[in-house]
Image 1: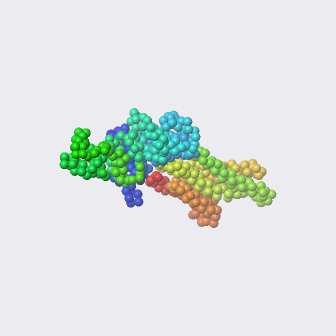
Image 2: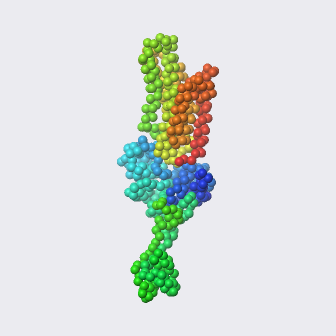
Image 3: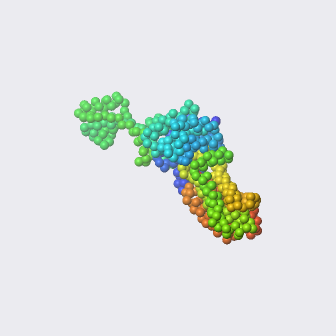
Length: 305
Length: 236
């Protein structure tokens, strides 16, 4: 493979009804990464993923998967890609085993692989039951088993924990984390919950209203979480003026003294000054904007979390 | 293509599809059985000149409407397997040609209908012998009465496959199928160029093969159109 990128999109755009649902997205995913693809509902995550899998046609832009053009070598690419798109697809009248068998026949791989993936998602016991009797979590696990069936190099999971209860979410997360990373599987996992991919992803891309607004390592995202110091004192206005007089940067925010992040020595000095002048200091706290906060600020959407 | 067909074969398990495949022929021949049983003493002298031929024609008259409705239901069930739980996106994200997936749906429906047509022959034979007709039936006529209409009805197999696969809401193809069945009952009053009359093998030239050829040709064209649309369609 000559391209280091497992997924590479250039100016990927999809117009629906004259409006761009996906707008000039440049996505880059390296081999071996777990890439968290984040965005509120309706931001264009699923549409992007559908285009990656060749299910929908881009209005413009290019897609390369595993270094190959999806339009020209779709079948070659899909042989090495496992996917789970939104809510699970399954044949309810068939058993779990038969569902996998139907896909196995299309992939043309040995039957033993079915038992292997059933064991990975711990469905061996329920394999003979019709899928319509499965719980949502089990269906989702079956979907992941289906995605794993072809021993893919690239795994694309769209909202794999959507609609699951906390126990189910945990289960799926553990499952994804336990996927053999040693084999160099690259994983793209989309979600509208930052907390969900926070613990798995090495890199994140955040999409909002069709535009990619952030794409970098999760550590870089955390750095954006600006921290600061808040101080509750008896007379904040006077205290602020006092501190300004001594050359400190301070502001009053809702009855609290607020500072940017400062080294310990400076804080100590400030506290000493304030005490000298008779200010009572009730509490000093560090305020770190949570990742959730940053995410919300970036996407500018309330209520999606 | 064979891989796709074998997967399709697996998917139609436990859907009651095989029951439906049996039901059509059983109904058509069974009703004629009832007809003959009730009016045996009246009908046998009436048909004395060609008892087998008359039996075959009678069965055919009941068979055709049940074929029209049966193929619509079969096509809808085959496509519905994917629509029901949004399995299209899974199937089409696998390394298979879209064309093959589409054609497999058509072939499975055609194959099931072929089984029905064959059963008609078997059941007609049984009924004939049960009625005490002579042991050697007119085999060619029997085969033609079943397989010619099968070929001539292909435009409808193609049409129903297209509609069922391309439209998520299966009420649409089924409505079209039911309307077609109704029209087919009055087909003998229709002009030659109307496809509904083709399965009856009636045309102004008196040559059943013309109807068969028209059916196969038109069917191929309709299927091709559906395939091209499916190839370009975004999957939900």
